[in-house]
Length: 96
Image (cartoon, helix red, strand yellow):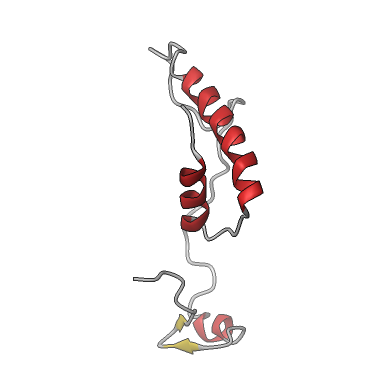
């Protein structure tokens, strides 16, 4: 799949990454190569292959789901710069 300079600039804008014209030209080729490689993965026959999260078979360690120290909200929120009604207050990060 070929990526043009306008697409690279649009991706950069969406990712809020500032790149110059020269960088956009260089990234055009790099992104095209990456997408070509990803397209090659479509050719691999994965029929009957179970999804996995790791190449090594392992079980995640489990612990009992039990309350160990109840009513710690006040102590935990003591580290927060700002809190309201037992919740952390954080700055808005999504525009819209």
